[in-house]
Image 1 (tube, rainbow, N blue to C red):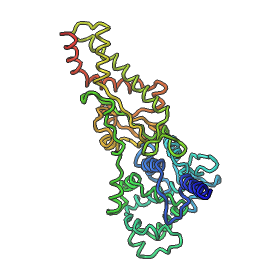
Image 2: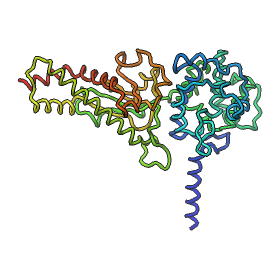
Image 3: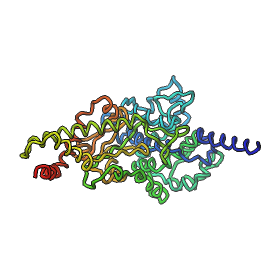
Image 4: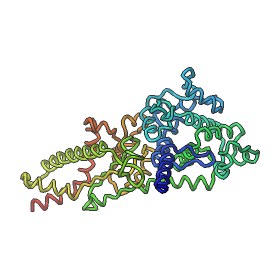
Length: 422
């Protein structure tokens, strides 16, 4: 009985740690869960938008300026963000383009929304820590001042301790003013787990790209871990011919993954694709193949070869399906892909792919600016809204993918026709 009680309380403790990861002391913030890690990747992109560096061009100027003259006072930010009598637009731009992206962020970590998941409420506004960090970064970008994050990390235990008295040496080493130091410490003491977000490789890489970080070995080492290579797909299971046209499908910025307890059968990375995502992949594949089949028949009909019998045509198409076209979806976990990181992500995840389809969550495209050089035919990739596939509104994109496949199959098609018409 004694062992049974010990086992029960041990399991209860583990569940509490999982469900409430930020209850640990500020001096020892917890590691991020897999879902929170993904939130860190989403947050890295969202910060680029709210700093006026990504997103729709017409909103960037407002984001680059909003709140710039506000003081670094975390208590004031909390009051403005949580008091209905205050104006949240002192720190935020009314930007409907980021609403759906924000909802994806909150799905993977409710604590990043204003009410932090309390009573099941998910606000349209973020937790106060997000506009606070944005304001800090905005001011540093504006003044072109750098901070030494290596020095902060080396003093992590002390600086995250609310009882520690910051010394002049701490300020000199980190290159922070006393006001800036207090502001950051207030943020981390209010939400201890938020410090781990700022040390997450993908988010730290995004911050480094603003130019405000002084070079440092610790920061460099952390940023080098911002790598999607572990989630690589290689087409081995779906390919019988190395020369087949390979189509990779990458889900990005979408809620279509289960995570955490009590979801079973999660991948080793802590996620599982929803049945809806699997259905969308199969629907996309079916529609691409249907359009490709139609196009190939038209190509053959215009060729100098004799007309194929239905039996010969079926034999040809079955051979093409088996040997010449391969599809694979990355389903281990969701990704964050946008034009400026797309080439790198594709190299890391699907270097063998001939064409890449990036599946975006509902209306996420509104938070991304696509120039002509970012999409097909300039590059061999397309971004498609998942719901456009569901409601058969992706005909143009599907036709472009089909055209690409057929352009790659033309030479092989000639050889196959020679075999069928000796």
